[in-house]
Image 1 (spheres, rainbow, N blue to C red):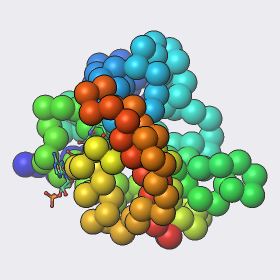
Image 2: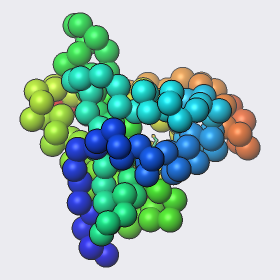
Image 3: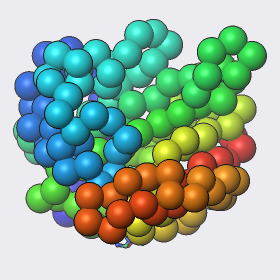
Image 4: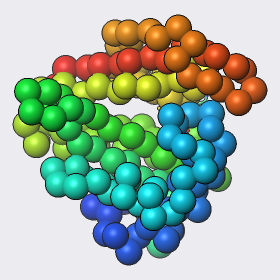
Length: 164
Ligand SMILES: CC(C)(COP(=O)(O)OP(=O)(O)OC[C@H]1O[C@@H](n2cnc3c(N)ncnc32)[C@H](O)[C@@H]1OP(=O)(O)O)[C@@H](O)C(=O)NCCC(=O)NCCS
């Protein structure tokens, strides 16, 4: 597989992001976002406001994945980054997610963040947990039943962290 090209997203990329972004969110099994969120609200959430950054990954001319990076909290918590990743279903398992997580760690380091935190990783999301663990993130918190999975019911919600 050719390596994905990762570049900063432009607002005009949203029409290519939205179909897979919406599919992932509507499924309700990985993100604690409202599954019925509409396109405008989704775009506002995913693009945020500076210093938040949105990136996309392209395979050839096709936009197949995206990630979002920004401060996890405001003010005295703003030196810890938060990031979120979405890969289109048809191209998962090809290394694009790993490439984006590594890229986001580099971007966060360059931007001066001192750590990266994921607030809401569903423990049922085995691929994501394995990927993050492999890249140095540790589970630092477990919220019992914190994620309401559509078929598995209440599963643990994990907080994961790695220093930068
Ligand atoms: C999680 C996600 C970003 C991973 O992206 P991906 O491109 O499929 O992942 P990669 O191909 O880079 O795989 C990287 C690693 O993840 C793990 N992994 C990925 N999918 C997996 C699966 N279905 N089962 C087990 N492990 C898996 C493996 O450890 C893999 O390591 P390897 O390269 O040594 O095999 C992607 O599946 C996705 O967008 N899922 C839906 C949205 C989501 O869950 N986002 C994360 C929310 S916390």
